[in-house]
Image 1 (tube, rainbow, N blue to C red):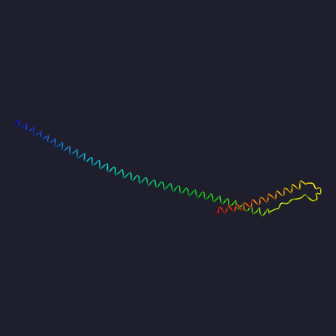
Image 2 (image 1 turned 120 degrees about the vertical axis):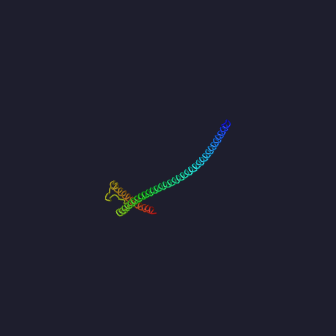
Amino acid sequence: MSNSNKLQNKKSKLNEEEIKRGAEDKARAEAERKAHSIQDKARAEAERKAHSITQQAEDKARAEAERRAIEITQQAEDKARAEAERRAIEITQQAEDKARAEAEEIKQSRQIITTTNDSYPQVESKNFEVNSSNNTGFFDPFMKSVSMWQNYSIFWMNLTKKILSNSTRMTNDFENRIRK
């Protein structure tokens, strides 16, 4: 073979290698472009799915939080309502017990007043004079002190009777106000 043939063969091999390299470079560039395109699409799809999943998770968490908040609020309201009802019943019971006790006291007061009215009739004051057998005309201090003591005793018994009869009226007024 001649040199020129060798040279031509060499050139053609070089051309073939250059063409081959060019084709490989183009194929590599096209493969990289497609790979980048696929990666970009995959990344975009992954981000879209991640965003969608994140949004769903947030929505689910928000809904669960709202449901739980409503549940907790309802439990708190129920507990507060039950406590208020229990306390109201307790206060009502205390008020009823107190009213019963006061009514019993009033009943006892009425009995005492009735007994007192029956036992102590209205007594008029009397002025006891010095015994007429005492002709000396002198002041007898013993008789005057007995007379004063009797008058004061009668006064205090009458006053007590009036107070007790007024307490009956006041008791009746009080009972009428409670019943209203």
